[in-house]
Image 1 (cartoon, helix red, strand yellow):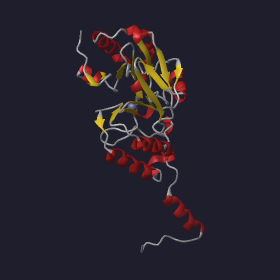
Image 2 (cartoon, rainbow, N blue to C red):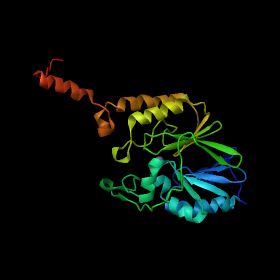
Image 3 (tube, helix red, strand yellow):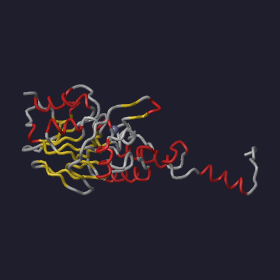
Image 4 (cartoon, rainbow, N blue to C red):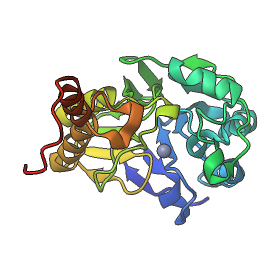
Length: 263
Ligand SMILES: [Zn+2]
């Protein structure tokens, strides 16, 4: 049997466990009599991940569900395959169901035509729809569901005691999940999600990419400050809610003021 490397009591992360970069962070929540997975990653790694789980002596038939934090290909390309191999149920937020069920290339980021990215995105049925405030029981544990839209409409986070699985909301370097109009990103919603994370009492943040880290509110606040500015910057196109420069310019144009180069 392969030694289980717990990050925290009841929590294993498969990249740390494998001692190599598989891709997205894959969290195994060990409830004792049963377990579940948060995300699975690319199709190419599904078998390796399931082999690891088996080698750690988890019974595959005790997998309660596989949760998609959201429907991005790097998180869930392998979810349909894993559903078959584990004979488990797939859980996601209702806003992720369409992307998962249709395998839509644009919504899942499987296809970014202008960059030559075109990955297969197998369709997957969603068996359980998770809503904010719900409690998922896994053995002796209770996982609280948070709906944290912003990066994408269906983004979920989960609270387990003093741990917050924060998805693509915030990473250790204060970066956040990509903001892209085609993906359903919404900056005001993102800010509300970050504010909720900021005000929470969780002690450790377990993101979907990169290192797990201890809460430092400066990391979250820096992201809030940046995104607050993004709302008024042309850089973010239709994800911005306004562009003050253009409003000012329009007033000048309408009132017949010519540019004043002395200012
Ligand atoms: Zn991601």
